[in-house]
Length: 437
Image 1 (cartoon, rainbow, N blue to C red):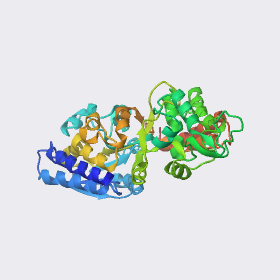
Image 2: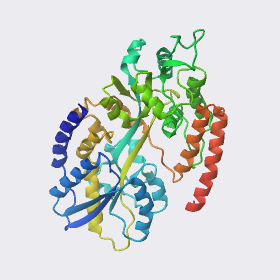
Image 3: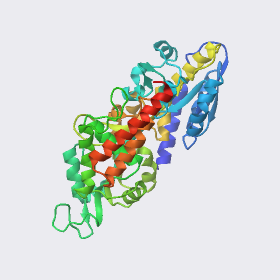
Image 4: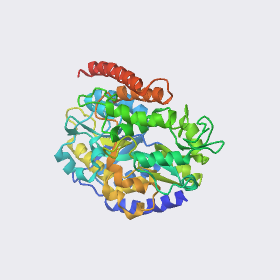
């Protein structure tokens, strides 16, 4: 059913895209190269968008190459150093800042954006700023992914839950209602055994995806992973309080399983054992194929009431640094191509791959009204990528490990986050030296 809907959507959106494929570039014919990592089911959609652009623009030929993301991360520095980098490269949110700091990318000035027909204000603010560094923009969003909360409608109804929770109080009440042990006892009842759960409220688990629930909770409580100077600070009082709530759901409330994995929780959600499954939207197709009666919501404010927040990933169109004498017409054509590929019509087409809209104009398009994830669209502006410093990898690794230690009960929340911050700052110090920062 989804394939049919997507097919219809794609046809309609492709028509819209073709109407705007005429570029802003009016110079002589040039050929530009485009490197991206959309090698999965999304590849045909990208190739169709490029084909439409080439057909509408006789003075620009885009020659695209798709290869695994990791290959690009390895090759790009060398390609830039040798003066033969592609004209346009797609870089993900967790990599873009380090390439900027290493001088591999060129900033996009206000004049550049205007030349490419790119309206910065049309995009969701946090999403566009993901590729900003030291006050300059280096990339334009082309794809976006969200960390969401899947919920089982049948299990919720069976337990008398009539509203998807949006606050900590609502969420706590809901996960308690969803939970019962194999003897039918609820949390708080005499004899309740949290080691023998029959159904439970929420899936928490021990890998990096599971840690993104902790990341969301910290942001919701006004905390952060790093301070303004880029040093790790996810052991602040606000962060500890937010993560403690999640760990208490496991260790005190007994409404989530101990020592579980993403795969185990994924299977449990598919089997109707758990009400709420926080994870990436990339599982949408899987649950639809299983014909589950489920919904998708934005992450409730479980960490605190400061703001809505959830993790988001994204991909950005960038212009690598080129050698002296680089053809100005190529840069102008590359900007025009970026303007087309990131524009509303192309983005509408791109959502057929499962991507979130990158801008409000697309999210409000009637063609997406029946999308499973449409209930999340009003808060896409509250998705926050883990970016902003070249050493975010040095922050995220220890953070993920700290979450795992706290979730598994190997350390107290405070100790786990303290140890994580210590390790992260050691790695950041090394990264600073390597970058000469």
